Length: 166
Image (cartoon, rainbow, N blue to C red; front, side, top):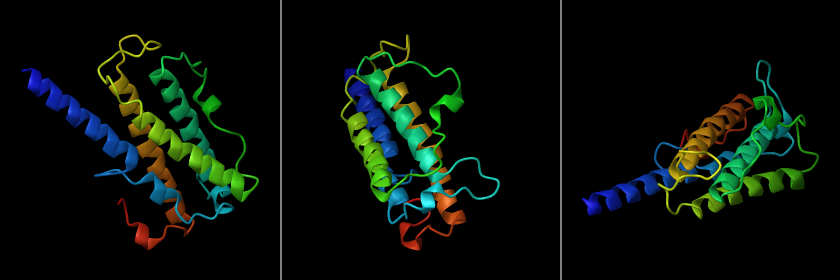
């Protein structure tokens, strides 16, 4: 029975890693941001609520929130979902854009480094496991990365070599 639990734990860990880094049915985050003109990330097509810049910063917010939970910190839960979105529609420079992308990608690796004791409970969220926190982040990132792919396609900035998902 113990070997079944160990094998299951490895399966869960691998599934979470696949989601974080875009393997299997998830898009690779590095591909989503590849060859993207920094000026374009502030564009909001008609009928769309947020720019790519705003989405990336929203993802960084929740990734840092999740990392805080995984390090037994107690981050302040925002009162409203709107509090997790930046009012700034676009970066002021290419370096600001690249810094945001690097912050996001480094955060993925930090989450990967926090993948120990996945069944342990997160201190600030009674009854929620570390695996649940990471799983929610994977789902959140996957959703918003898909939005960014859609926005890039809408803006004519999705390079065919990047494929549909992988």
